Image 1 (cartoon, rainbow, N blue to C red):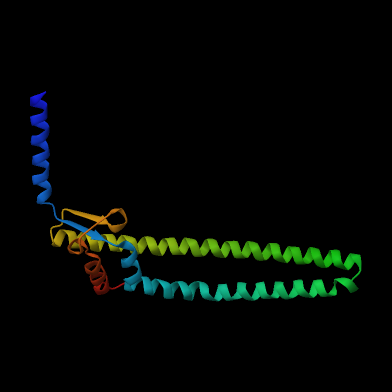
Image 2 (tube, helix red, strand yellow; image 1 turned 135 degrees about the vertical axis):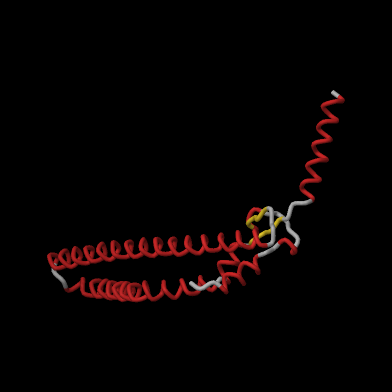
Length: 167
């Protein structure tokens, strides 16, 4: 029993000594994503690519609202057959609009995920480069760290390095 206790204490002491030499860095990924110049460029590309389509959808939505108001207003003077035909046409237009809107949202999400993936890979490469250059043993994301001293935070270094990298 004494031997096991001594062995356990010896291992604990040895572990503490090895952790004393460990150089750790912490990165706030959300802050890097906010401040990275590549993110701003990605937003501009995103707006150029999806802005016009978004405006067309907004216009179609306003047309549908106007049409609905007109149908509600004119319903009292329409025959039953006219009401049914107009209602059916309106429902078809709503269905087509929702389908187009859903496709648009899917395209936006796919593009956003692709751009975010590219940027995260680039951030990973930059962070790994900093870790190698400055001989860090371990890099952690701030999301998984409960507490850290400011000296361990390398977020600013990552953002500065990203600023020097051409797209």
